[in-house]
Amino acid sequence: MEIMNNWNQFLTAQGARPAAIDGAPDGTVPIAAAPIADFGQSLTVSQLQEGFVVAITDQGLIGLNGDEAASFLHGQLTNDVEHLNQEQVRLAGYCTPKGRLLASFLMWRNATTIYLQLPRAIQPAIQKRLQMFVLRAKAKLHDASVDEANQVVLGLGGKQAGAALSAWFPALPATPFSKVEHALGPLLRVADAFGSPRYEWLTSAATARDVWPQLAEKLAKGGNDAWQLSDIHAGIPQITAATQEQFVPQMVNFELLGGVNFKKGCYPGQEIVARSQYLGKLKRRTTLVSIADASVVAGGELFAVSDPEQPCGMVVNAAPNGVGGFDALVEMKLGAIEEGSSAAGAVRYGSAQGAAVHFLPMPYMLDALDL
Image (cartoon, rainbow, N blue to C red; front, top):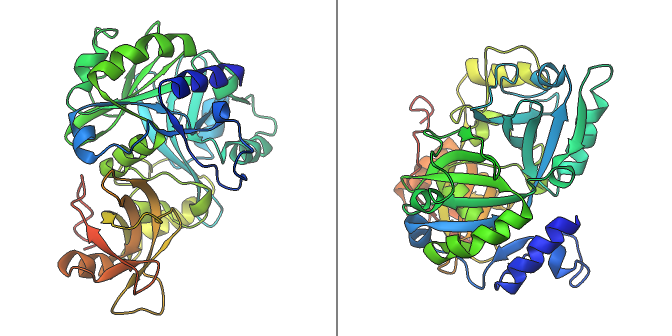
């Protein structure tokens, strides 16, 4: 943890502002150890579109080694792990036996290790749960965000990001959800946002300190809030402590994003996930909205004015948008999405009298058969 503290201390000296930690009394978490929210102000969508570099400090990383690591995970997750190669990056979900998501992962591998990236806040419990099911399989889990050299994660995106990265990388990953290995650490291309590629660069704290000033000179600098805002505009959901066991994968569009393989074998909840796909019509989806309310949080409820007594949806992820409100991914009844998209103020946050929910275009098509 000392390496991460040193990195956070460096960022704090650059003007970084720590995020509040859920459940921790003010002042009990040292600034050097707290996740970085921003550098004094939230970045706007237009700044992200132009180009940004952010310190991602709220994500944990589980590593799995062993001859049977891939086959073990293949039997636990919603996506194909056995055929994951070293050039690929994938999304994957971890469900309860009832098909509800406990965690969502960004997944990749190298020659020896499979990696699962997830929120640091839920990593210990998820890692412990996975460990319970290893049994006699030749697979060993470890906390790769502590035990390995490339512990710092930089997120980059927008029009100028590729040119800025080319100072170190002669070749960038060519397509979304691919990666290249490099002496300074792997570079992952994740889902595009704002019409431009986004990247995660996993590197050492020493390298990060060296490259940060050069990147920050060319790109707007931010922290977790900016990365979450870019994820939201890419339409990529992430399960957090507030939303565990709330959604079947399709409710958060996970199969549309390649996070579910319907041809692979069994995994916890597989029967329910398959039934949701093939029997009947999906009744809920996740879409992109903006809410002019600074109190928006993951797990917060949404209400249709036409049916004010019961919630019609839930916030999956939310991030400040730099103009006083929050942009969010929200999981909702399809009828409420249709109603809210066609009538301003038809859906509200917190209660039927709460802040109006403004619907924004999604970066990918929701299944036309659903709508």
